Length: 291
Image 1: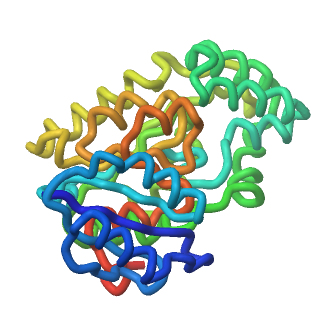
Image 2: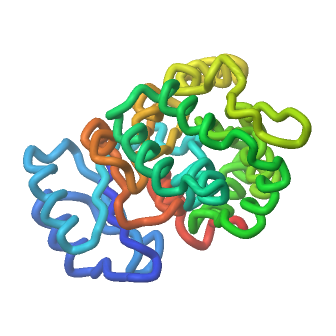
Image 3: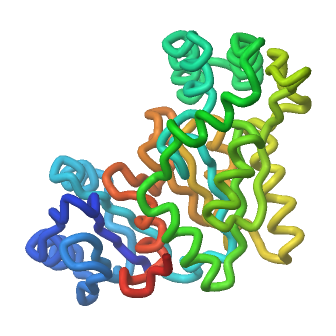
């Protein structure tokens, strides 16, 4: 048995009953269940439609996301989340670089690294080197003035924790940011890279080993092992090439507003919805959201 989920941007509310019913009728699905009026709906299917990706492209043109997944086990016991451009709306290193006067240069490198065009470790070292001499206090300034949560972040973490799921923030960014964001949202733990600091300024180096793609996979394996659950019981979300390992390993790997190289490798793609889409995908209705 499968579940087809339709959802859109919460502010747009452009998911119509006609679209949901027409698709359900065309595929011979079960009754449409509304998780949020005009925003998220689902119906069951006995088998995977052969024309799924053709229909997916059609509804994308209408500003609607369409996801198909097995019905069994879709409520997950672990959330493993990337931070930059996933839980928050910014790339922290780009914001630091902007303070240092290298914003455009670093942003260009970040974009290429996240799309898999550059080696992640080397690209990170190159960008951190450009931050050399930046006062440590700038981190607090960036956190206060530049960093904003992705819509739905609070509800995602709070709802999963209220339903006994474990939540981990695993970032290729920096602990100076993940620690703050994890505490703000209530993540159970956070992992990231360390910006090395000497005499109150960034020394232009990053602590080793670098937490990149393989470290995120290792985090998923270590946390599931510690919890006594399988990777199939995990939900992972990210947007960059360094997230692909954990996205492919998790039972539900969600490419959220992802780079092209990431989206094309993932069957669960959220291009219009926010982070609450990850709750709808598990079958939570909006009136069950916490936070």
